[in-house]
Image (tube, rainbow over all chains, first blue to last red; front, side, top):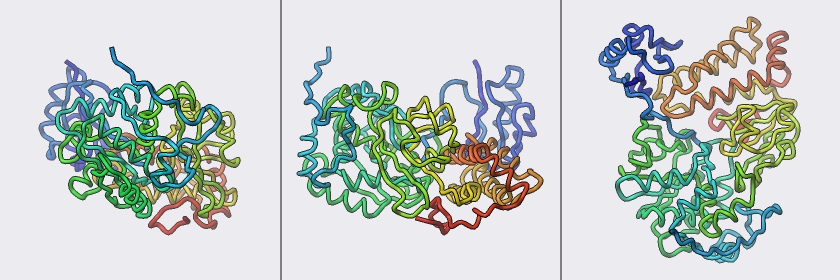
Length: 78
Length: 418
């Protein structure tokens, strides 16, 4: 089973703990908000990814099965 | 086997350039509307017919209308229909024009959608008070299912037109986007499956219902069928310089407005250079070659005397102010981009500010709950590319004379033109 890390943008407060816990998977942007590496989480990093998700103080990071289309974004305004 | 009802032939034998949504002979009243189009018929297979027509959303997303209808039909619960006439894009006037000239066609589309979905609630959301008044007057002429349509005057805010924000506003009074999922099609207004369609999309649906897919596809191209309303803004930014046209896809772009760089798709859109405009047609494939899409059908040019970078910087500042502030990259990134663009305009000699605009545009792209940051990123990044020579002039010689030009692109609330 393949998994991906997903950020709940509204929930995320930019604590940045995820980048400390999973530096190979998450980096921080210029304002301290997480940028998740594209693609599936490598099998040998799944434990790290799950830990980062569990430890997020806002529970805004989730490890989800890849390809379920869970967090596609809505249409633009206009 | 499905029995397809015989449908009347359409009254305007396109191709031939006859207008559809801009056909207004006799005025906006019900009698004239019925004289133009005849009574509404809603075929039982309207969802499939919309699919055969290839009708796509006209609010900016371009999502296949039949797929949206099917998603609402497949969800559990009694559906709700929401017509989106909020038109938060400052350069767009096509939705309010349609509502004021042809309100009954929009109402017909809502009735058609509500009928085929079995919806018992339909809400028409409009920001412009004058258009809302015309819609109310039109509804007072109607009987039957249309009597149940409510008109709501939505707050004048860019993000309210985003699907989840509109549903959130109806539900809670807060006009800000929500997490997806759930999508409105599965859980929307009052927790019920909700169809949110742009008012122009619904007007087209009303024509597909009446005359069928084959007639509807007589306009446009095989890939981009039907007509499209577009708002053209040209020259000096006074009110008379904006007009609404009905375009048949396939039309050459440089025939639609004067020469010069063109902004396609409004403030979430793409700048194109005069060289790019030349040879481009109003089709999704041709626009895509330059990173542009139909969007909500906005085309704009600037007067030669103004500074395109100053215009871009002011719009970027406006966009930053339109952020709901819910998502970190958007709330922080958009003001940072606007600051950097101000430095570019002021003549940043180091070149650092232009680099930051590019860096931060890429950084905010795709990182919001809605697509406001994506659109802002596309807008500013395309400006840096298309106005590269002009940017170089600012860097070498400081701000150009055009910086003192009165504001052209509208930025309501920031103190700008029309």
